[in-house]
Image (cartoon, rainbow, N blue to C red; front, side, top):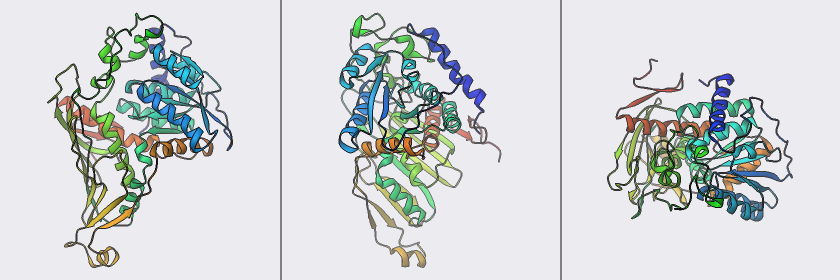
Length: 445
C-alpha cells in the first residue's frame, strides 16, 4: 500500500531540486542521506524552529513558548524562524530572540534544531515535513496534513522509515470528548454504527480567507517588504506575483482545498478517533458552489460531502462561509445516538457528551445495562492547544505515538481530499485502498 523508500526519496529530492532552481537564496540540494537525531532526555530542553511565521505559525510558536513558560517550565524553546516574507521573519526573530531565514533548508540543516513546526501554505506541508524527517527532525505539522493523496502515502512511509514523531496540528483531537465517545461506542452504547454527521459554518461581510494584503510587499520589495515568490510557489504552477494568492492562498486550488482542508479536517480527524479504528472511505461525493462571495476565489463558499465506508456506515458533513448556524456533531447507531458536540462547533469546548438510546428497538440486555433515558457522560475541560503541544513534546522523549499521528490523520486527509476532487470533477469517486489511489469505479474485491 505504501511506496518503497526509493520512490519516496525521488519525491523529496525532486521537490527540493525544483525549489533550488527557483530560489534566489538556494544552496545545496536535498540529500538522500538521513541525518541522525539527538537523543532527548527527560529533562532536556527541546529546541524548536517554526517554518511559516504568518498568523497561524506565529500563534503556534507563541503557544509552544507559553507552554514552556506556564505549563512545563523549560520544556522547549524557539531557536529559529523562517518565512519567505522578510517582514514576518524580522518580527518573529525579535519576538523569540533567535535566528531567522528566508530559506527553510537553513533550519533543517541546523543540527541544534530538534523539531520543526510546519505552518506554511498547504502545498508546502508535505515537502518540508518529508525533508525534516530525513534530517532527523520531529515534526509538528499544521493541518491539513498535506495537499494530495500521494503526499499522504509519502508521509506515512517516511514516518515509518525514519521513526520520527509527527503530530498533526488539529489540536481539537486532544479534547476529552472524542476519547469518551470512543469508549462509549466500544462499550456498545449505540449498537452498530450507521452514520456520522457534522458541520463547520462561519459568516462575515468580507468573505472567508480575505485576509489583509500588505500593498508594498512583493518580490520587488526592498528590506522587510521582500517576498521570495519563487520559493513560495514551489511545485505549484508558475505565475507572476499575485498578492491575493500570497496573502489569501486558501481561496485557490493550487495551494489549498478550501473549506474541506481548512475546516473539515477538524471534524474528520475527531470522527476517526471516535470510531475506534481510523478508516479510509470507499466512496465519496462532494458538492456545493460559490453562492455568495463573488470575488477572485476558486474554492466554494458552500460545500458538503457524503462518504461511505466498507463497514457499513456513512459520513455527512456540511459547511457554509456565509451562514454561521451549525448542526449537532453526532454518531447514529441502531441502538442509540452519541452526541459529542451538541452546539456543533467541533473546536469549542463542551462539558459532556450524551447518549440517547433508541428506546423502542433496543434489546432487553441493552435496557438492563443502559436504560432508555439519555445518558450524560462528563468531559474533562482541557486547554486543547497546550495538551496537544505537551503530548508532542512528551512523545519526542518517549518515542510513543502522538495523539494525532500521520496514519490517523491520513485517514481524515484522504476523505476530505477526495471530496475536493469529486467536487472539481463533478462525479463520485472511489478509493482503492490496496493501491492507495483514487479511481472512477469501485475496485474489485
